[in-house]
Image (cartoon, rainbow, N blue to C red; front, side, top):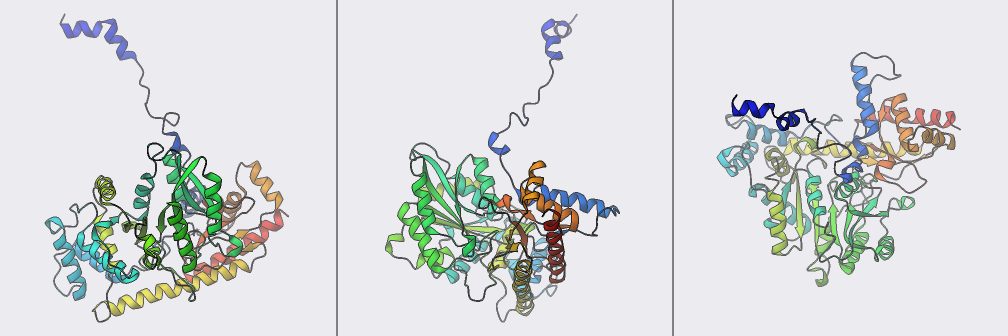
Length: 500
């Protein structure tokens, strides 16, 4: 018998062969922080909506409606917005560059040629610099200089795969619980807030300090409240970063210039980094309220702010472009010393580069056609149509919701959402508890099952204790939005009567 044959018959070998395989990864063995991550924007209510939609598409007549209205997420194109022609033409020509002159307007051919010339091998399928194409970053720098009134250092500007990628990277920089920081690090986050922040901080195992926006004052940000929370947490935590979302998601408020100055003074006085989420800065619907960037306000401050640190974010998913799927965005960091900037660049290098199509979308967003350009007339007409319609839709949502007894909604000054306060009868709250659901989740599930309207329960964004809300987008087309408001009104009245 050969040596291999003898080995196979040996007790040692046969014993090894009989050992059962135990999968090394399971829910019980996985990272415990990840178990606590919640993201209700795509949570239980939207998941149920998708199931019902599939049943309707398969011919189900079980439901008292024929379609689902998805108002749970800020996706403009999913709600029927027509893409901006200039952006799609530039993207198309970059994808298929062997088109004859005259296929598109001359400025489209010029933009596509410049982008392709900046790409390795003249192909957008090649890697770019990890910070993005220098050509596109320069477009962003020019845009920011015009907006904020001061030149921008190209080396402190990063193109990113949607604002969320950059936000996650920056938050990781604060997760140092030893060494320089003797106390546990903490991040201040608004409530209500976009759940990217709560989900990311939970995943990182970070401590979150919730600061509540004042619903009774139009979701005002109270700096006095920031000071109070800083004092309350100072013994155990070191507050390192303040997140501000302006315009607000899900609340739709736009900060005043004075309020923003107060925020900057708070951060400067207490050595707190400012993370400015400004992805909705072009979405402002109150003609009396201008949306300022924090960088604009910072540039007007005194010498004591010369070393101030902050980061600001924008995205092609919002604004007038609404190109969510291309995952384009940019991040500007301010006040970073060269050694810290090198560390950030190192981390961004590990991401290889943001998608080139997203970078092209950024270029089209910040450097659109100008008056006199061949594409300008069509671009202006399309942009004006989108923005004027959003102004009208913001008012439809506010006025219609406030007309329903038991629902109150602050003005939608900006962003793409309303966050109405809903009165839920005690009997309905008890019924929700019996089903192991929050009261507003129960309300939203019942709204979906009875009307086909999909919104997100307020608990997914955090909210003041004892209050209930839901978040809805204002994005459905005007006729569909009116239909949606009709469905919500009928449901709320019947729901209230059923559980009164």
